[in-house]
Amino acid sequence: MAFSVKSKKSGKMYYLHSKEVKLAGDRKQTIFYFAGAEGANALNALPAGYEIMENARTGLPMLRKKK
Image 1 (tube, helix red, strand yellow):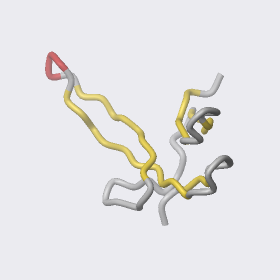
Image 2 (tube, rainbow, N blue to C red):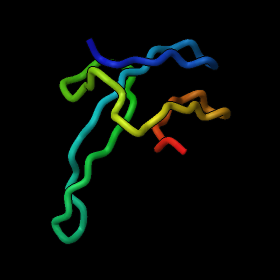
Image 3 (cartoon, one colour):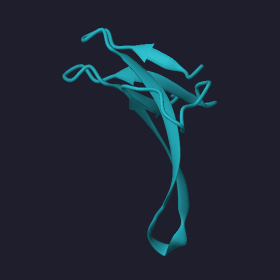
Image 4 (cartoon, rainbow, N blue to C red):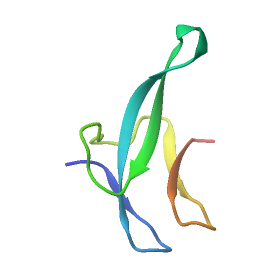
């Protein structure tokens, strides 16, 4: 089962996904994003060193590195 979080503002469930993207200079970077449906790239747990925050204006969840 994928890691999910419920928005406090809208009440919708969002599922955490990751994807490896290729940047300029052939550098690879892993990005994390939330989607409304569970997909093939869904993660089962929150990555180490990250925490969830919610955008106050839109209610969308986001990941940030722990302070």
